[in-house]
Length: 305
Image (cartoon, rainbow, N blue to C red):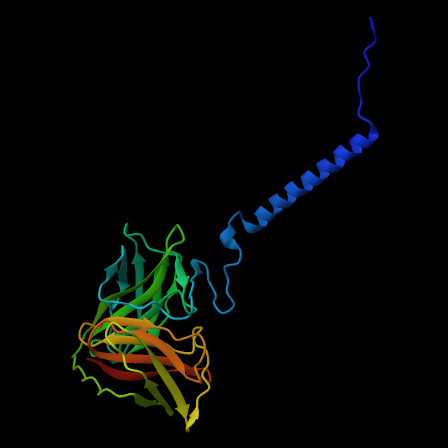
């Protein structure tokens, strides 16, 4: 019976196999460590932008070219829209006394929403104004982990006030929905509505002269260019909430709400907005701008035929 001889690999083949195995193991380890560092979530990398911060519970918002899409209808006329509801939790106020406004945004299942996109450096913009369009305030509430928003709020006089929550909610699939929801706040005391000031294209505030050029038209997107000057010299505007100015327009009567933003850069030292007016009527414009670290608000009345 012939003797059986076992075949053994030569040393060269063995060294080659060990080298290949080591390379494969290194690749696998590197891939695993990479997934551990990224948390296995591709959205965990590259979300931040240079001029916007995104605190926990929020996601990045795409601002596109820096101008809002034209709005065909005014917002803020309803407490609910697109399956979301503005739900006040504490809204009792005494005229002229510091209080607090607390609220949640509920989804279609009445659950508090906790994911919001950061738009102009904030996940929530709250606009408050009295029914006669006086007492304008632009506030930024903070959100608790359970989705409850709160902000100090003082309402100077009795009457009905309107609060607008301007936000962009982020769904579980990452899609975003921009909304403006409105709710009335009732303050005890006598209500003496003030007449709306006459239409003008120039006004003064704290030593600054603010004037605008442009004519709003129903259903058309037109530019409004605001120039701010002091002592005859163009003021040095600073970015406030990521922009050189913020403009809110409210329609007299139903208090329909428009919130537009300027072009990303100044135009010959001026702030330019693109505004679409949804219908005729008188509107009150509120322009927030910042100089030397202080935010001021210039107000205008505009008549749209």
